Amino acid sequence: MELLFGVSNFGKIKHAEITLSNFTLFVGDNNSGKTFMMQLLYGVLIELGNMEPALEGIEEQGEKELIYGVEWFKNMETRVNDYLAENKKKIVRRIFHKDIEIGEMYIRLENMNEKYVCESSVHEFDKMSGEKGEIVTKVSRMMIDIYVMNVNADNRKRRAYIGFGHQPDMESLKRILAGQIWKMILLEANTINAVSEDLLFLPASRTGLQLLSKYFFAERDKKAVNEIRVFDFGAEGEEMNEDVAENELGLTMPVYDFLQFLLRYNQRAEIVSWNRELLKFIERHLIDGQVKYVGDEIYYHPDALAENKEDIPLYLASSLVNEITPIVKALSGVHNYKYIFYDEIETCLHPLKQGEMARLIIRLVNSGRRMIVSTHSDTMASKLNNLLLLSFSEDSRETREQKLKELGLSVDDLLFDAKVHVYQFVNQADGSSCVEELKFQTVPYIGYDFNLFTRNLDELYNETGIILK
Image 1 (spheres, rainbow, N blue to C red):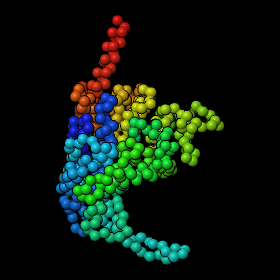
Image 2: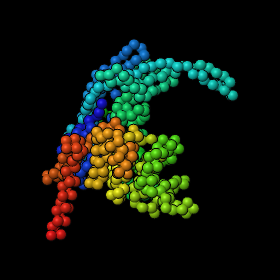
Image 3: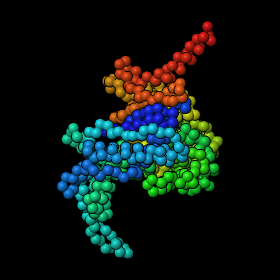
Image 4: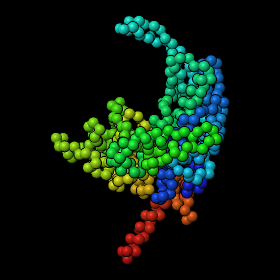
């Protein structure tokens, strides 16, 4: 099942329908709305993750099984669209802290060929009490196993489980499970978590924000959070309190969240262990060294620098190292982010390093993360397209291995079992932006035809020809 998000007359974007898949890529001109759309998607996902779920359409199979199937999905879709229609202006203001024109905002659940089966069971556990834990009593605990079943096949896969310290009534249980399953659908996740803890937005301005955040924003952090993230829209029918909505620092909510991520970063050994291979790839192929943490300070140690030499403070390191450090933090901090919005991924990267970044994006998707990335680099788009051409080819195993060897790649650079959607943003003569989905072309086998970039390369070639006549 996939979730499609649609919007019309949003700022300069006339209309767009974006399918949120494992890997979603935005390409296009500067000032064509890519960042605008990414920030809207980020904010809407958080908004929808916190809304009350629909309870209609849930099937009861005896006393121990609840099924959330097609009927519930349709009711949930209707509930969400009613909510978006009623609150679209407030949602946009909450994200951008500004009134921005918005026509229609909606979602659509596509390929509803699965259902979530929740089975309950009661387990007994030993509870220790007393000063020395010498008193042992038996306590009961309800466990809910959540399975996903394909409606067209008689198989199912366990996706998550929830434990209860008490026995909730049926209506409460339905509501709790509906909320958690809806969050799993939004994130295509296998775990139960709050949506906001699974999403990370990496803005195009991440290098400057990272260097300034500690010194410029730390003193105002608490005030900013209170004013921006904790909104009170008032009772139904009341207008938002303008004083509360004051955007003192002039940044959008996704950028504020990025600042909070930077200010609250703490390394967690368990997360580092889970992401060790990704972190090693970054060290060996992108920054050619290590990012180190000493208390609250961050240092860089290049591979070429002897071990006994003093590490380089981050603010004195290259723009490339500063640019890559936020993703290093994302892979080593307290939260193991499952959904990453990565704006302008080519920033500060040499064309050869852009190729390595493309490989990292593929590996992040293969690690189970959902990625929404944007680029206006023909080099980045071409490299990603080449990796997808290799991934989706029908070559024999031997032929593929030979190609990978010649290209200096490995099987880890191929995309496995993931859905890809690519969107091109094009500025129009009237000042609006057109958003079109690009299809993967197999006849001829060229993958994604980035005609916008191809046209620019042709113009450069023709320009060179005229100069050299």
